[in-house]
Length: 168
Image (cartoon, rainbow, N blue to C red; front, top):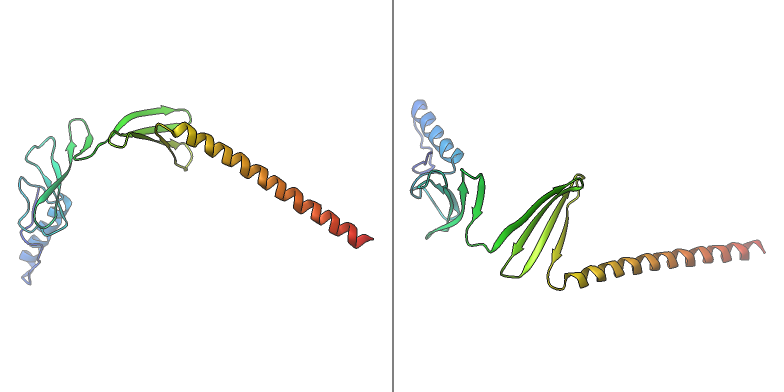
């Protein structure tokens, strides 16, 4: 846990310079952790409030006040985001991949993110009218296939007519 007083490496002799630089790097390495905001904090600074050692809070200084972003629960190995209505409602794993389900109770919607064994990621949104949207998507796909097939057939017929006209 370290904080640096000013992040200003003054013009100084080598041993003092090395100490000052190591202190600044240590503060960066520990995310300016401490029980209070670092004196060197400026607008947009991140720092880790270690008042609770097993669940420190990541904070953002906006230039006037600290905004608590999340609690890092070391015991449970979890990140608990603050001021958020999105929760993880399910995590399942199958032979085809892993599905992470997020629910936003405020918007009454659910998003499932499928992480297949391949490199692609697919997301599906589910709401009260989601079955209608899924049916619409399937209908759109079928229409696209039919349109492509008709266009291909028309192009083939044009080529055949052109060939017959040239051979006469």
